[in-house]
Length: 313
Image 1 (tube, rainbow, N blue to C red):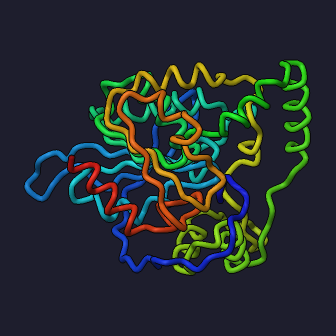
Image 2: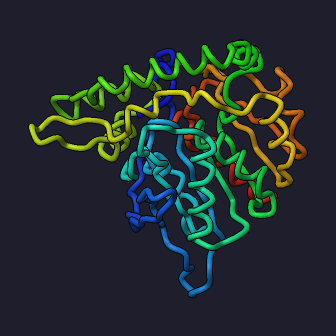
């Protein structure tokens, strides 16, 4: 599933009509968790190695969110798309803590396992937050970075969050975790019911897109119902987090060309208007008119064309 509230109703402009090539399924270990990733192959037809492209999904999504993008680039890049911990076919965190630091470690472990540097990264939302931090920590390991709405809350929202003292943050987190402990995964009577929920969350999706994302995003229960694969604990915000200045400092260490992507119909604020783009050494912004939070779905063709041009520079 997805990690933001529903967007305004709109008909999809670019229904995806693609015959997919099935990727290989692999696992790696991070913090004793068995984590899953998809791999579209490392070799060209002539036997030479393709450069690595890492695709990182957002919160409550899964690796197959990138199938349309992977299909476009798989002949030129060795594409790897992980299921983040607590998502898709990856293990759920022991204890239910899902901090950005843990996710960054997981991505670092994956790239170490694949062993190809520098990588090109395309990422979305939570995955973009993770990728931006990873790239700031290891700038020589990333050649180009595309981050779709990965800057997180606006500066105004961050100021409000930082105004909450640590006692209150901890108490709120404990209450939230206790509430989630009693929450059972929602069960949908049919795949069609789950798909309807998918389109309710992102009404820009075509029926074909919603069906594909739902098929890969649910597991069938023993009673014949369907539930989303993600761990309910991913809904909780970790009580300890970097403040705005610390995050900006990490962004400032990114040296590769960086493309920040935003949908004009999304909740995310414009980083040029709110000033956050100034933290980057070499970043530009591309706003997509009429797109919501999932730009890579909402206007797929335009997004791919923009990324193609960016990577060709």
